[in-house]
Amino acid sequence: MTTWRAACAAVALAAALAVSPAGIAAQAKRVEASASWVKLPAPGETQAMAFVVIENPTMYGIYVTSATADAAARVELRDGGQGGAARLKPVDFIGVPAYERVDMGPDGPHLLLIDLKRPLKEGDTVVLKLATDNAGTLEAAAVVRKE
Image (cartoon, rainbow, N blue to C red; front, side):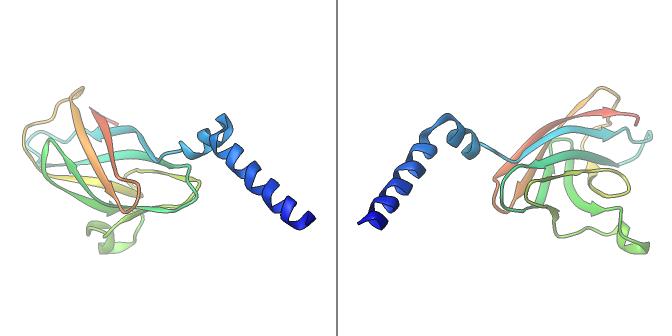
């Protein structure tokens, strides 16, 4: 009978934690995109690099599988950390491990905005949307700047 009581107590405790402020806060953790920016392209350029910080506080790794930008016809996922010609080719995804973050940069994962729809100038805002495999779509307003 004590085993049954212990099991009931464990279930009651789990249920209480699930609706407690601490339990709700733990469930409310979401993958977020922040600190986004676009590198100012040279005059006449039709491409620009974009960078986003993706923070994953969840217990599951996620993959950014595609992206769009309101200022570009298409966006490619790239990894500048790869060697040789591979750094110039698109990648299938950008992984963000559980409980970690990815800081995009020119020498690592980044977004390449291709066929810009308008000339970008310093201070402009570009809306980026990043599709993930299991964390929905992340949206970020990226400011155009020199560096």
